[in-house]
Image 1 (spheres, rainbow, N blue to C red):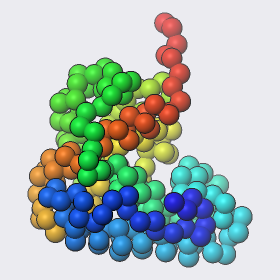
Image 2 (cartoon, rainbow, N blue to C red):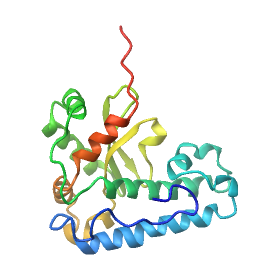
Image 3 (cartoon, rainbow, N blue to C red):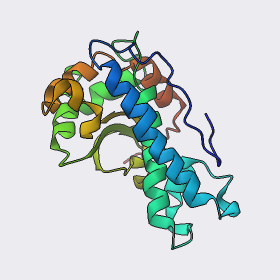
Length: 214
């Protein structure tokens, strides 16, 4: 993918219909080709006259939004969030997902949530709790501890010094064509395409420091 200006909307890592019957083909077309494309185009438009920002990735634009020119800081952080969050979401899914986490992520899940079922219950609750539009995330801190983080609009855990592992998009455009207003059913279906292989890779790559001794 293009990680700096001029950003491009790279193809999905699978066919538009590959997540059927859980996420429908039309939703994937609209979500990727219209919604993500709009964030990509707007981010390019905002950055066009600021060459000093052209080498920054969406992640950097989010992390360092407080250092951006004040006249564009808010819209850039929002649209960079739209690009980053959508890319993360699409890559978190697979038509042939690994169904359960491997170590060391599995151990961290047991420690934080008591096991996979406990994680799923709390993650679903967090996703349902998002009022209006947003995401639910599984994220890790620098010690490898896991947290479930709901965010609104295009906010991300990056601004909380957390490392994203998994996210689900609960904006209505992610599910309304198939699931109508039943967000809970969408979340249940999403668990069938959520890929623990990628989540485990991200967790394994994240910096983890041991907790200090008491």
